Amino acid sequence: MKAYMINKTDRAIQNLMNLYFTASEEKALTEAIGLGILNPNSAEVLNIIASTTFKQGTTTNCLKFYDRALKIQPNLAEAHNNMGFVSSSLNDFASACDSFKRAIILNPNYEEAFNNYGLALSIIGQQDNAVSCFKMSLYAYPDFFDALINLGIALTEIGREEEAIPCFQKLLKSRYQDDRIHHNFGIALYKVGKYKDAEKQFIFSKLNKSKYYLLRCQFLRGDQKLFHTTLDKLIQNNEVHPMLGSLCDRASQRFAIKRKNPFCENPIENFEKIDLTKKYNFEMEFVTPVSKILNNRKLSFKRQKLLKNGRQTDGNLFLKYRKTLSGIQSILEKEIEFYRQNSFRSQQYFIKKWPEEFKLLGWLITMENYGKLAPHIHDEGWLSGCLYINVPPKESPTSGNLVVCLDDDGYSLNPDKNTKRIIHVKTGDLCLFPASLLHYTIPFRSKEQRIVLAFDVVPS
Ligand SMILES: [Fe+2]
Image (cartoon, rainbow, N blue to C red):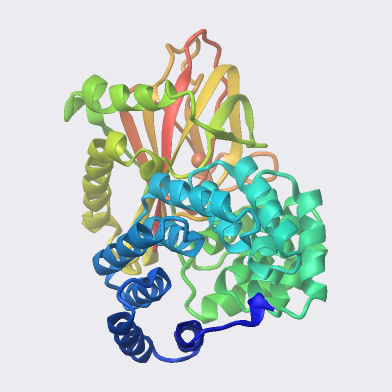
């Protein structure tokens, strides 16, 4: 019987919760503050005031309210979960993880907290742990849409597509209709080479990026007619995207049909190499912070099918090691700005349509003896970069060098005609190039590690 005994304040809180989810933030906040005046010691009311304040965009104020709520009721799992959410939005993932863990300890069936914890772990590159969190969230609430789609995305990210596919199939059968299901299902199918099935999902999705993946699948299947129909439609719509630019270049090599590139005409000419050792104390400003990261035992790595005898870190290092990399980040931002301002490339679409806001996404690639990296582009980037932290001594003039090319050598109809360039790289070089440009590494032989900080300018 006790469970049905709801007092006046409980009812008021329930009404307030309904307002929070349905009414405008202003109305919910006014009501919450009114209820707060009547119940100054109600942690639940303070929690709602904090959440509504956050919705309005005043983060500092909202943290004060959460603090007050937790001083009154330290075991309020919702407030810990919400605080974690705020910390995540401020890119403070260490605090976010602590808050989510606390919420989970207090309520082991808290599906939201498990899901949020999984997302935070996924962003900082702990995908395996993220997968466990999403599974725990689903254990608590099997029909939780967010946890199921996040599980599918995380499994795809770490190369466990065969496990991800049933997640998306289950979502398609559910009552949820969301373009993200089709897009991410398409990505999982594309990654296992089921291009035709992937195309169907990309067609269903209304997300912009799905169109580029659709084009890529049509290209990889070698369906020239469909490929050119889609390509021409995208060009007519004035779409500017590195995947589109890359596929345009690759099709010009493979199918010998030329279109004006809607991202960057001649990306090889827009490749730039800068010797940072002439401008900076490279050892102190670059090698020392990167070595500090590499020596961190908690550093996590992801599966990278293109990489042989090497390892790639997981997550965005500029977020995970913000303080350690702050010096490198500001130097890179300066060099990126020089690159962008160069009048030589001012008429290229990727410069004209340069993202108003962007973030840097960074990861480390370490390679051992005989290490190599197969041709690829960075799908998320706008401008890509490689910073050579250590290049071992060369046993031949080209060993360990970077190659930029318009298409994979094996497929290209005319591999030597200005479609490929071998870039001699040494410790201290910074390379910047349009994200549409394919690139790979020539294998090398050395007892020394080859260390590269790779990064992308990613539109926000
Ligand atoms: Fe790369």
